[in-house]
Length: 277
Ligand code: HPA
Image (tube, rainbow, N blue to C red; front, side):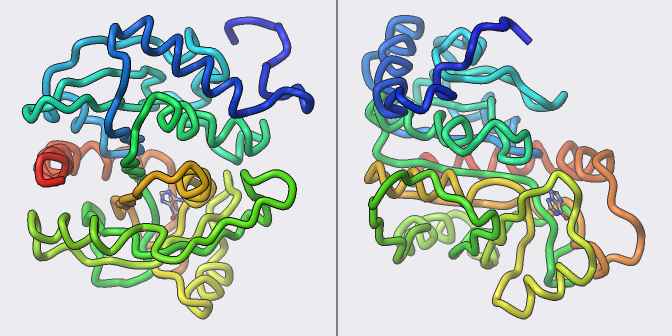
């Protein structure tokens, strides 16, 4: 850990939006870019996209920006990058995800999304590595997220903030993604708390309630993105079949290996989708 000072988002009296605003100002100062147009959170398997989207003009350790937490996981880069896209737009690449399972509370989980919004981003792309419930999705398959089921029993919204979540992962952006790759399938993402993988019974439960993908991120971030008025695209890399669908035990190594194997292809796919937006 970088410091033992109390984390600013852990102060219940602090405004998470005020801290995101401050973070956006620091980001502008450190990157020399006043405004970012689009933000991407790159989960397991998606990191290569950062190099393929355009020209990286600044790369900074996320912990240098207020409100960001040190990465909990090797393989999660912990950097924020500013990328100049071929069309002149500016992308903010978030390689520093705070997961809900880390137990630091949902404010820290969604801080990167709120910072991106405060930095000007109107479009948010959330990616992750996840387990597949459909057995036709072999490991390495990218899928569009069509909707989610939030099984964390938590929310980034505080107080009586009633936010509509219809068409959260907008059809418009999913359709654009399919113009790039018509073979892209889509499914409903279920966010479990983790960090344990699901039991086979929980996977059957997720399937019975309409889920197709199981994972430990994204849904809470998606809610914060909608609250901030951003248009959202979500994509999962199926790194494994979900527990019980595959008969062998799940492991983090398997997830990382599937991510690595798919990385070049996913990076290329995401870069082509972003240039089609
Ligand atoms: N379940 C939850 N999270 C995951 C999985 C899974 O099967 N694979 C990768 N992340």
